[in-house]
Length: 144
Image 1 (cartoon, rainbow, N blue to C red):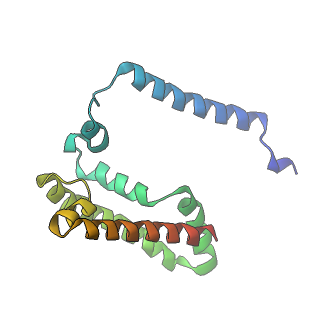
Image 2: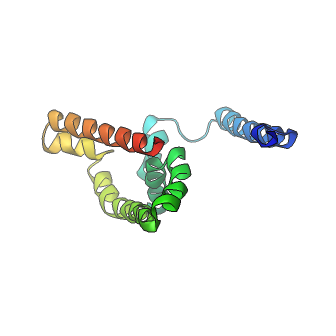
């Protein structure tokens, strides 16, 4: 079928997008930027406001499979699944305004690090494994 293949326009748009992405990477690599340490790169020196942190948390939960699967899920099973999306948004706002400031004050980067300090390394490993299992099971569910 004709719709199954890229046309010239598709190749041009795809190539331009890749070139722009490569240019941004080369530009920041040559310019040096302000990120000289791992903390600057990963944590933005702990100076970001709640909105970019909320968006970052939300997008780390979403994947391409999720973005493609949610409309189909809603189409086939109804709009109640949309409530999950609203819950994600509200949870991210609460986490970024309540928990992230607390983690900043005590110089932590994750809840797993907090659980290790509060309880033990074993609890940190257990919760990390449970998180991995949750993410894997969710991604398997969305692949069906």
